View 1 (spheres, rainbow, N blue to C red):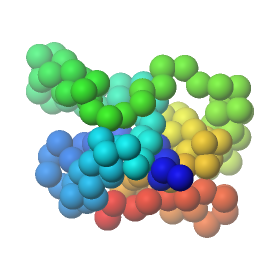
View 2: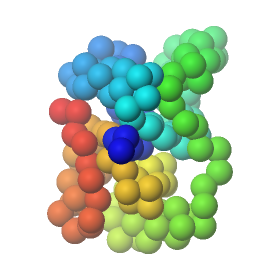
View 3: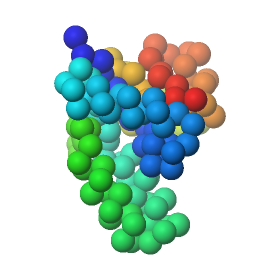
Length: 138
């Protein structure tokens, strides 16, 4: 059985900026290239990356990064099921997390996947109270 991951935006940001944890993200992307892992990422989490780059470096750099993301072995979820919708809303109502993070977390829970993240400030409390698998990159 393949490992299943859901990427939080900070995981790809770490990779692109060669931050701590980038090696871990790269290893998991290699697993997906080799067919031993499945990686999901919701379009709203990609939006977070696009927006951040657009704001700091302009439209051209944001579009280049978006095109790079589309070439990675990531299954981009443009829509999400009612199960993910309800789970994300439940999580958002219970914890002080962003909408994008609640969707990534909801998707990880529904897919029984590992959430690949570095956002301790968002997810530490969730990990203590929920049945969720979090793969910390740092």
